[in-house]
Image 1 (spheres, rainbow, N blue to C red):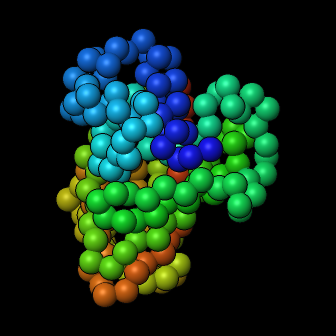
Image 2: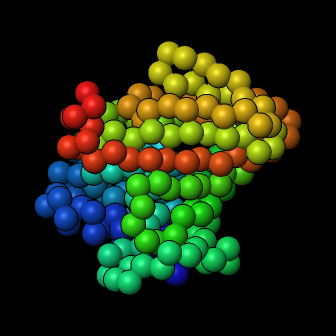
Length: 196
């Protein structure tokens, strides 16, 4: 299945599950109604920033927008074959995101990212219903990450942990591409309250 079709189906499914009209999601996400409609019809390739805004408005992680719809994943496999792992390219920065995790339900999601030299992506990430932790492990190259007011420079082998509850900026200040692994773990809202 084409990645834009997958995103389209999943976005519509999540919006319907929450009972949001296009107007309601547009207001919550600050993404125009017409843009959301184009995405849901598979006629637009949204940017990483737009997808992040939609994810926050829907109360899910960005990775959730790349999952198979529940209809397609009625019997999800515990194996994600390399050839079937969905690839998505941000149309602005050119960064390539590969969803590594199988469709089977798991609190952990793995994503491989190839990030071009000299590019930058900013996420306006805010608090979500469920607490989400993310680790970024550099495989090749170097990246600068701004997490809220903190700034980190990562090189091959370095690993950074963070919560997805504040604005985050990923940038590659070098003249070479970078590659890194992202591991996400989401705690249920009930578990989050117990640990608060």
